[in-house]
Amino acid sequence: MKMKMLNGIRIALASCLGVVAMLGMSGMARADFINGHQLNLYCSSQNPTDDSICIVYITGAFDAFTTTDLIAQKTNDAAPRFCLDENTGPEDLQRIVKSYLGRPETNLDFAATLLILGAIDDAFACDK
Image (cartoon, rainbow, N blue to C red; front, side, top):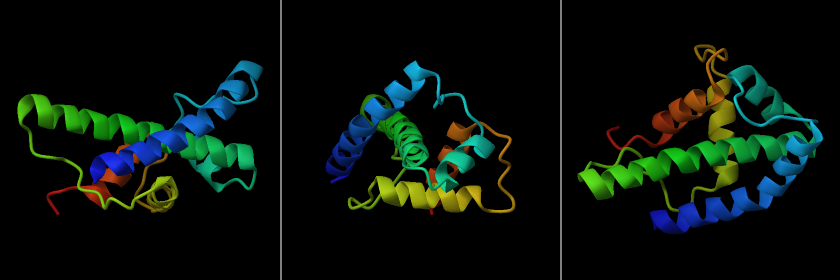
């Protein structure tokens, strides 16, 4: 179940990586080392390129966090940190992160990856 959902996210990530790679090579945009303000701008933009950057950044971070969680489960017999619905997709993750970024208590000065982790923890923590 979880693997099926992760594979779907990986496919979406791979399809968007070409766009981000072209942007990075052209110097038009940089999709790494951004803070919450910058991620919020990408995710709030009506520009399809910005929307692609938003989805790629969120799904890339999500994939890293869930992969780390899976490795900890397999190698250290750790309890799962994230409990997701198998139907969760990239658009759901984007919606969850955008909502988290819009909360008044969210400090957008933090690194975007930390904010994504906060949103994922808030939405999918197993110990709820």
